[in-house]
Length: 310
Image (cartoon, helix red, strand yellow):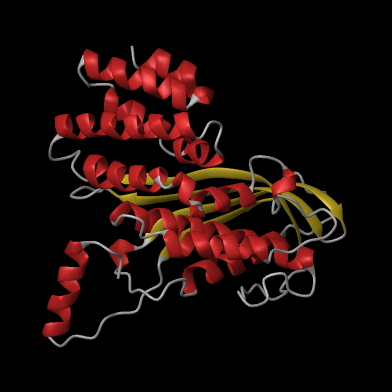
């Protein structure tokens, strides 16, 4: 069961009452394969088959040893936008990964992950097995294994973010699994994004950042953001906004010590719009302080903060 005292308490009650603990999968994922750029010579039905196979894999496989109630499942989207056909049955795609978890005492879903990976090449023949074996991540054919390896990698990142949001550093085992996938990832022609030499913004760097002690503050920020901001926002907006600025100060310290880190960009990518919406009704002083920090730590969106947090 996910690490927070409330859920732990409920589990004890269920056990004492003599009920069995339901073993439910962790994710409620929607998979979308977009193939509009693929030649009309290719039967598009194969992408519907792929979409269904991936949905079954993600939603029906157990990714942790914990039990999730239906309302605890992590809501997520995997959007595979195929850019081109590299050769017969081999495609180049961008993978967009989105995940969220509910804010306490509300129906609002707060984003955990919102990231696009533009380096996903894969081979797929209709009805080929779509499975993940963590002992044979690269499989016998790198291109045939690469899409599943990417999906499994980002599932571990999602789980890590979700667990971090409920308990300090609870996501560590999943980030380590993500790094394990990186270290055993498929390789070969057209496969990129798995090594530190493939650029500064890829799967290797994200897993390295999330497992390095040097970047430990990012995990503290994740926990404080969800537990001290999002989970109290609907009960006490003012306290939540004050706590938000405390989180931003923590991120500013992190950024000062770790300039141009991938993990901070990854973190802000999913939260910039949410932060703006929460701060729009803040006091002028609080809004100004938050805006100044945001423009430092998230340069990509600096103009947006300037415009929307006046």
